[in-house]
Length: 443
Image (cartoon, rainbow, N blue to C red; front, side, top):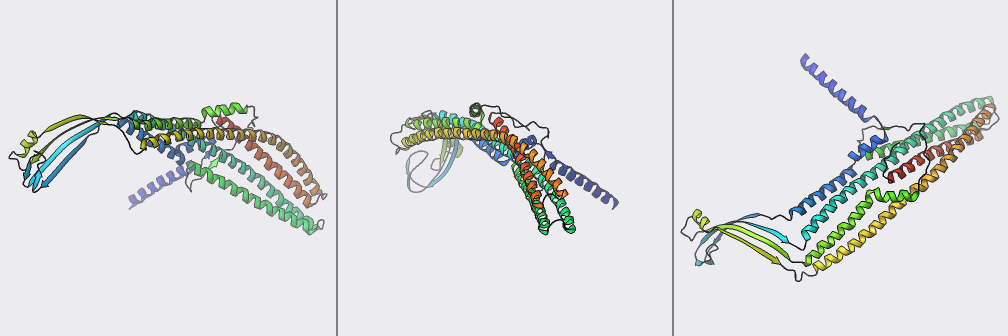
């Protein structure tokens, strides 16, 4: 009994240790690089794009195999009664006949208007296109990770601001109560301080909820489970805030060369051009090599089964030429459809170029705006802090009303929030512009 207890305790310790280690691993502090690396490997959108490539590779292999000869085996057993033709001897007889046929046949396409060759080339282009679609899916996830990561950092700082305001407002409530008891302020001053404290508490709750919402969004991108915990790594306080010194059009031209959606659009045009070549091949004749070997048995013959199989053994080889004369305009319609799809692919490429330009232009203008806002917000924050400190001193001396103190506090809070918002927007748009040029995102 003691041995069983010891074994149970041993396994309990092992399981508990494993669970603790797993919990520690899951609750580690994630850097932006950690998030990007993990998401690229585990996000289901990226995995789905990878499966699309797998399918294209299967289709590519199947297209190459279409050049090979096929091979089919066959076996039949027949019974006939009355006037009939013996399927083995071809004699006209009136009898009950049992007959058997076995054989192997094969066919190989020698020429089909280059359709097989063009189909192989088209499927290779589809494989290459899916490579770029995977990269596009990864890029979309990376950008989403960056946006959510910075939102989390922003809301963390917003929580600190809200908590500091709550602590300050709670102290003001205590001071107001003391001054009310001393008869130095009116009741409405005290209730105003209480109202501000309640509002600040509400702001803390809202900020924490916003933080949790962005945490949930990041966990979704990382494909983490509901029970997994995550905390992100903060940016160093001494991080140099970037100044934008780049040419917008240079960024755009680099984006056209490095972003995978442009390469995917080019390949889409090439794929549809190959589809046109395949369709035109329908006007050409098809030449096939065919062959077969077989044998048979019939019950009306006096020869035994094995001897009949040897005697009736036959081989055939030949060429089959199929010339299209009229196929109800199927080929003509396929050619027209392929030409239309080429035009659509060219239009889609133009749309992709416009979308990339919009991304670059938006990020560039927002980066310029964020830089200017950051400078203004920093100056505003410093001025608001001085004004708030002066207001607190006056309030403590009884030279300022509660209403005026709250106004100064709210002004300072707004200045703080504007500053951190401009700071993270500045980081976001600069990183996006770097990313559109093919550079890695790093904080």
